[in-house]
Amino acid sequence: MTRILCHQLAPRVGDLEHNRRLSVQAIDQARADVVVLPELVTSGYVFHDKFEAESVAIDRHDSLFDEWAESAARKGALVVAGFCERGDNGHLYNSAAVVDGSGLLAVYRKAHLWDREKLVFTPGDRPPPVLDVHGIKLGVLVCYDLEFPEMTRSLALAGAELVTVPTNWPRSAHPDDERPHELVMAMAAARANRMVIACCDRTGVERGQAWNEGTSIIGADGWVLATAHPTGTATATVDLAATRDKTLTEHNDLLSDRRPELYP
Amino acid sequence: MTRILCHQLAPRVGDLEHNRRLSVQAIDQARADVVVLPELVTSGYVFHDKFEAESVAIDRHDSLFDEWAESAARKGALVVAGFCERGDNGHLYNSAAVVDGSGLLAVYRKAHLWDREKLVFTPGDRPPPVLDVHGIKLGVLVCYDLEFPEMTRSLALAGAELVTVPTNWPRSAHPDDERPHELVMAMAAARANRMVIACCDRTGVERGQAWNEGTSIIGADGWVLATAHPTGTATATVDLAATRDKTLTEHNDLLSDRRPELYP
Image 1 (spheres, rainbow over the protein chains, first blue to last red):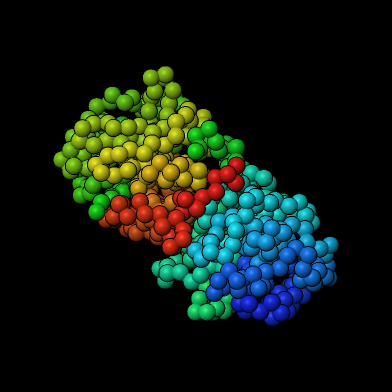
Image 2: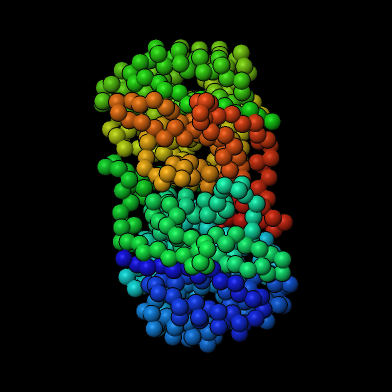
């Protein structure tokens, strides 16, 4: 069984030092095998412009990852968290890091950029990874990526059991008795692929921007197992090995039932 | 504006004559531009075996389609309804017919077969159609097809504004305060593609099998506009032309934001 924790933090835009302390503290406090933190937790989100983002971008050799690793090592945990990345080519990426006690294991660069992110970031040019770590097949997406069913499907086809999704979901209008649409889409993706999906949203108000605070861990049947309301953390213990079984009935397996020859 | 109506009927398995009357009456009663009836409304669903299904299979020249057309003509309506099809090759298909006052316009054969359907039907070998009829770009799926995001995406890429989905959703376990998972998936598909989706489920209990009775019309934002509870019909009036605009923000268009080069 795998214990997953999402910590719905409120980073401060442009304040690397504050966000460093905040993220390290969150990992220190977590009692979980997998800890997910929000998108761009190192930097905040609502940049005035590209220059401001550049001022808080870090590269893959940044000492922050050593601190995350040190904290993760004490827990034996895996950490997935968003950061504002300065690539070797000087471009900025909206990235997610996967870290464990041994250090930075992988970086995924968000492929689908939302709104004004397009003025700041370069979109990633690699498919999302499925890592084989700590006995888990771990997939990573960032926020708007999740709204493209092709992305969750590609992770499922590559064997992902758990998809971790650092997000910043801008507060959006929805009927009072409905969840944010992003969460409905996450539930559908979990069910369509029989994977666990852990979305870590953020909180706070940043330059007038509020968030959906929709942090949720969704089981492979598509139902929400845990949210961060009202404590700020969502935790769930799940059997990830069970997600390998894609059987729906005696005659149905959701991956082998696919008809790729009919798809565009 | 287009008025859509789904009529959640209870056909009787094996009783062609009863189901003929039931379906014609439903079209006669409908005050709508598009009328959607359940999957296999002509035949019922829970066949003992392939031989029983063969006994109620009809071909595309069956007079039933003339009756549907005659009724549709009085309304100027489009009708989408499921039927048990005997192909020219003698195979059985779980099909949906699109009919208007001029007759049978198109047939779509379900490509993803559910459970014991695989013992009875041959899966369709053509992608789902998008018809340009009555000023509407009309897509058609049948039931389990909808659980494959590739199918809804393929319809969106082909320009569908409205996806009609005759279904028979077998009653399934879900948390009390949740919708059936099929409906969550339909909501996500509507939102992911900004299309209207009209699912017509069935009612009644057939050989011990109950149904989700989840008939719903879902708007292009992904929210349920109408259900068949408690009247048995769901109706909604929608602006289908508005679905052509896939813009989400000044910088986002959900189809052009796709990154096909990263998808499997």
